[in-house]
Length: 538
Image (cartoon, rainbow, N blue to C red; front, side, top):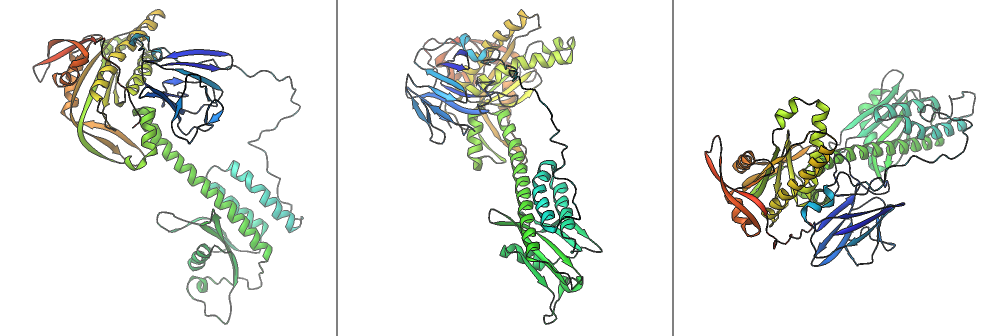
């Protein structure tokens, strides 16, 4: 597959032998095969292009700005067939895809190159405008202190105008909600007891989040529940004709008003005021102001809860993108029902790799040089694993443990693992050439491949779950990795039974510490007649 990428005045031709490409903007926790940086209008995981049944397809992966084919928006419309002259527009980048049966040799795979940035970021051009005056938007006062001599209408209007500024400056509900109550006290000083209560959506408990009182906080749970159930604000007075009991009678409150915190038809809580002075009068304007404040408070609560939900989802997504290809991660996030703690047992292919002589080399290197060296290798090896439907179980110092055939089943996991191993060695060779040119130390990898039954699934908590595999097959794969020499790929006999048709190999014997001598197959090359398998979305 050949993709010509055009951004501003720059053009780059990108080639790969793979049948599927994820395009977007790459970041540390989200390596993207086709990186369209620095186009800021492109989403992190924008879309994918793939070949299937001899045809070329494209789909938008729920990007923020959408994807167009020849000027027609395709976001939300599923996969779309591409024709030879079609142009894809993602952000400000134009993609032209050419596909065919001609395979590209492994050593020419373009995503093994260092970086795929189309154009370096350019500094903003000078506008030529002289700034006469500027102010710090983070320190500006909203409207100024309350003027006690102003009429009540002006005070209330100022308070309503100030509320958005409090949203911008108060980063938590713990600081925002008390500030709202304090302003109400200033605007409506006739009350002596103020409170803002939220309903816990999980337990239905009433949580006192902010309050102001002269002597005590007087709350009626009955009235709080009523105002939230009916979604109506009201003013009440104690009547001599009605026998008051419970918290209202004990509080000594003579008059009060309650308003719900309404957001999209749901009462998230309530705000209330009360006075023990029977002569206190709460007017229609007072209750209307309380309703408006309650709606602002509800918006703040809803925003806070949404941010917390997005934060938790971001943690889950970051964990997924660290271990899975963008395609698999997108599938898991879309089908959250399958994303749960637990495991299952099945056969998978296991790839274990590490750097030969790395420990001894690292002793003579500075810490930042060690990390730089590891990142040089990982930033090209991880996309190779992902491109072959592999999952990164973990990084083990200078080693990688990758699984093929999980979490989504894959009937071609044996072949995918072998092809990934071959391309990983080609990738290491390219990295070593680049490091040698700049005088940096470099090393070769040894890779071991094995297949067998394991227990695999998600461990941890709902907010922080990680994928892992457990079983003897993992340990056996490590033995073949340890027995592999520099730039070698060793295949176990169990693995060889599945892949012998398309590989050239030599039968060898390796010595292990605990298992004694093991038979292995040293992979020499893929057979010329071996066609690359086609992958499809899970």
